[in-house]
Length: 136
Image 1 (cartoon, rainbow, N blue to C red):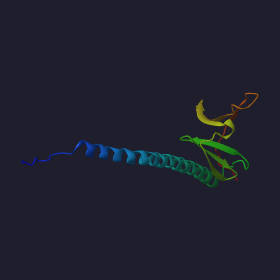
Image 2 (spheres, rainbow, N blue to C red; image 1 turned 180 degrees about the horizontal axis):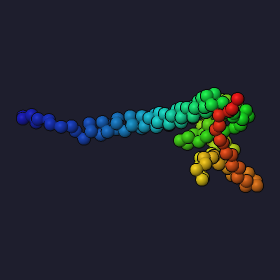
Image 3 (cartoon, rainbow, N blue to C red; image 1 turned 30 degrees about the vertical axis):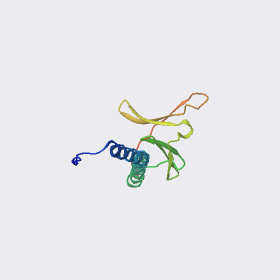
Image 4 (spheres, rainbow, N blue to C red; image 1 turned 180 degrees about the vertical axis):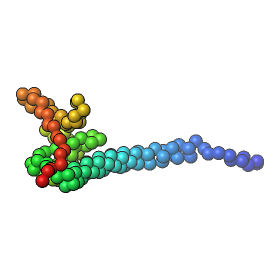
């Protein structure tokens, strides 16, 4: 009897390899998506810390007075951060009390507009910050 030369894979072998790849993908894809989410959160936290550090340096260098008891809520890449009494707190993706911080500019004057959509009176509170060097 003549032996046949086997060239290639059988259907069973291919199905087994595809099944193993599918099982590995189903396990690894959620793992990698969690890593990406953590990297985004870490990047946003780093950006918030840098912004806060810059504020402190400007305060020390230029003798700019900053209110002692002011809450700041900042949204960076979908993550909320609170700066309260000199401490930076990561609030995650939870919107703190419906507060949104938008930086805009009007008439060449920079200001930050803070609105609270849960406010009953539907008031819009606008805070304008001006950096100035203290004179002795």
